[in-house]
Image (spheres, rainbow, N blue to C red):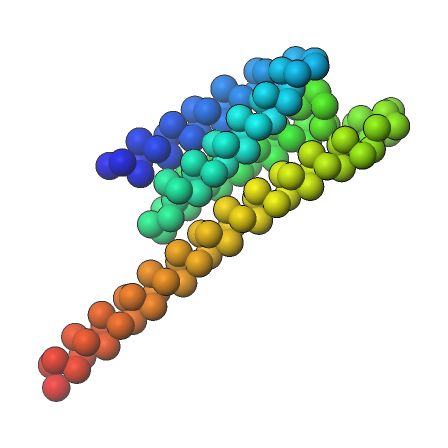
Length: 127
């Protein structure tokens, strides 16, 4: 139940990060970091194998960072010469996304190992 509530809270936080991302200045940076925080929360909520929360929040985050956010949208690469700022924000997004994906894969692998160990114990006890 805790993971379900946390997952929905991550979705709501990701959706609420869209509004400040559309604004100019510091609000777009706040929206960017709220989006990243919701990505971390969704990874926590999805670690039991229910990847719905993580996938939905990741989709919202990609839309937020590459299309909606005033400081990082892709169209700014053509108009703006501040490629260092945009590249660093994309790098931060890539690192956080990679960490969350790694945590989910690691948790999935460890749960698979635990399942196989339990299954092996059950088959050995039946012999």
